[in-house]
Length: 524
Image (cartoon, one colour):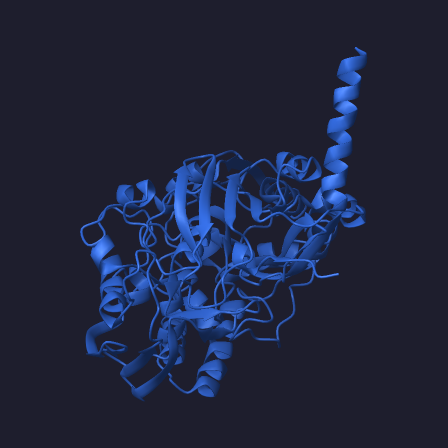
């Protein structure tokens, strides 16, 4: 017993010493909150996958920690005319195999998302506006669009550039195995163990200054408490998305520091507005309603008024969020600051429901994931209780995100939670509130099938402007219309949070990406 006690004491002491911190090791271990489903950078547009992609690959354009567009592989770009963009690539960028990255690789990478078969949600919408590509020379690429399109530089931030030689005819399995994982990013691929970890090694030939860490390991730890425990035990150096219940303890720990900012991710509800009856909306006896109540803007507004956003932020999110009015956060291009978050007004909600013909309310199922967003199931339960107070009886159906996404895309929900982040309001609205059209990319995430030709026109005008000021003004107008129409119901913008050993620094990113090459040893 004495030996066991002594061993445990020594282990605890060593863990505390690691937190209190000697000089940082050359290796960095990061605990991430969600699994990586594919390493193919063009196969699934899921944030955990893209996060890894940004280490091995680069894109023509990037964004800084405030989600502002900055140069990437392309040192500069310009609109030659309203339908032609020219991108000037940096010279001398090397892939991990030593070959040079050229305009030919960029053109190949912009074509590849359109050729992938079987993607559950890829990147085709980011390149679909491009109707022609011209390789002017080894370092100059011109892209033509059928109509003026000002958002192309933002769209291209989503397309990671692969080596044509390595990725020609490559399948997602070839990327997962590492055969095709030849990029120009700050780290080289070492190993991928699905459901467990991704290991990377520093690429000393990167076109920017080499990263601070020789080796980076991303460990998949989806359980909140387990991530916190791993950090406190010294098993990992950094965790993303620490649980809100642990923030106070982590902030006060002498061996740790937090990095935090308002995220671009807006948590909202999508309402089925296309079907009558809607599958999971009934009267209180469980009978389908002949008319879909969500088709009436008064009902949508009533639901918005019935939700106490301040209470959710304070009590459920424990301060790690800010109430939302728009589908994009205040720092995002096109946010309309004239609108404030809907005030909690249960009496007003009941009055609107009565005016719409539902004085006694109705019943619905609130669908949500239980392992994707911070406190997602708890938020859904809280919203259900709030709606019950205005006569809308709710049942919550929470499930793992992988199951949830399949059901959501199949249209199995009537009232569903979604988190969304975007570089601009017009891009967000195109996906979330544009009239569904797979040929144009409108409405790809518009689960409720809200449709308004006026909003579609405003989105098109905004995206079509190459004048940034004009585009911003139209985007704000489109945001205003979406708010007035309650196209969806924004709840709050998450705070993006990282916890790490005090020997490490990180500038919190609006886009929530956990980028190993932006972590730095703390300079005393």
